[in-house]
Image (cartoon, rainbow, N blue to C red; front, top):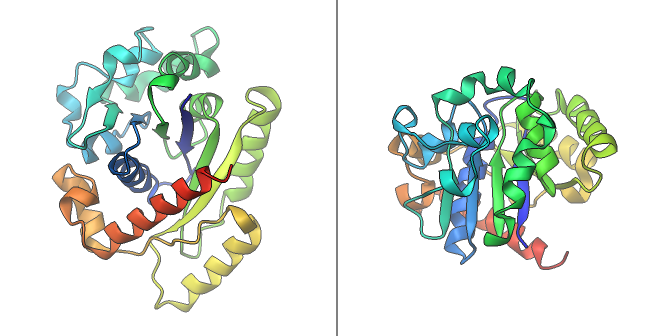
Length: 256
């Protein structure tokens, strides 16, 4: 049986999609069968793996709104072992349409449960909000990975995020766990980055991954080429960091 993990943060621009895409790619490279699900209406994870959103007939929208199967909408990617359940332009209206669906918080869970056994890991790239799409992801998931930017406002909104996770545990998914917290876009030259990292470590303690993701131009430009960084520039510092983070993640799985 596979494990479903949501990548989430209520703030945008913190490296959430970059982390989901690149950890998915490196897990596949490590021999795992991985599905990446894009439920962010911006569709950045879809674009980052080389798909043109406007041209997609298959998407997660068909699964959530039209009751199509997940299996019928999954596409193979350029990374062997990594599949994609993409987002397209239709998803932008899904937040409103889902409100009128029965069991609206469990739509994604019901779809993914049918294919969970086909994958080692299913990663979900969530929207930068705490709306019904994100709640769907959390209800479907076994755990959550939280990317936090290594900058001044990193902890802003974390309390609200943790409170919402607590509510989902109480009412919808009692088994939901925090898988880990990863610091992204880190500038080790800045004193404030080191101070914020120390604060994050005090807050999350053992949940914080040891590997920190630095700011890196090659990492930032990879999505514009429609590739994970391992295919764009595997030797750059960003690629090496995500490879090491994925190794740490997989090693942790063996101890659980």
